[in-house]
Image 1: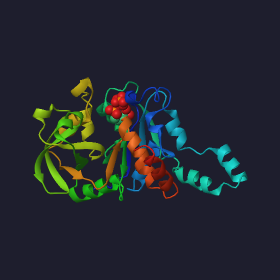
Image 2 (image 1 turned 30 degrees about the vertical axis):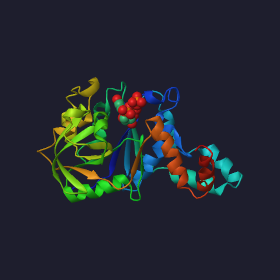
Image 3 (image 1 turned 180 degrees about the horizontal axis):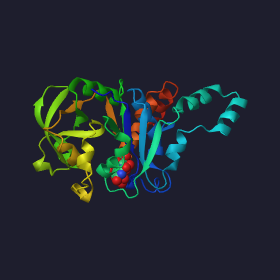
Length: 288
Ligand code: UTP
């Protein structure tokens, strides 16, 4: 079995739910407490042993790449002002030279199309997909949990969670073959089904480990729900030819592509920081 070393991070969406904030600033650069969403995503991947990253970018997304570059003048100035803590934090961000590549998705035609843009990067290797607007709060990195499940099952694994039945029409939904608790084997997948036709309320979140064969199906660029090239449709075609499982990951997800999810994430992540938590609790009391 090939080791999991690659991750694809699609960041080419327009982020329309966050306009006007996302008119000139990429959604993935919006901060939760003091770091942008993209940094949480990369840190989560590194904690899972990922060594190579492919950002699927579009117009106006260059700040994402800048964020992982060395800011020489800034570092020099911090050094001169003895700001050792911040300097160490910034230096921790730097990635091994050559470990991030970017691919441009000229037109955002859907998540499936974005992933297909990474086909040369993926080659013949298994790869993780991380949607940075799903922000995870997990004791063990969510990608690491998936990587472990991949080693166990030898095939495709998607992170899943249960949602109230009336909300399944917003997600990719699993048709379950066998529920084994932490892992479920999958016999079908459907993107954004009408509530009455949904096969379950187990939905796919923005973390995946996929086998490279998914690219063969994506290459057909067939449009699905919402007129977009859907990743779910191509993943569904792998079922029966390769192992395909859902993993009930341990932890919490915040949908930071959505205003309420983003606001909740600010509070949840601030409360995890000992230097901020007491003051945050104090001011939250004022809004009861
Ligand atoms: P979303 O469905 O959240 O779309 O994409 P979006 O454009 O980012 O946001 P809204 O819905 O308009 O507010 C999920 C993920 O897939 C990426 C997005 O950048 C995000 O990380 N994506 C989506 C692409 O990279 N390309 C696409 O064509 C579509």
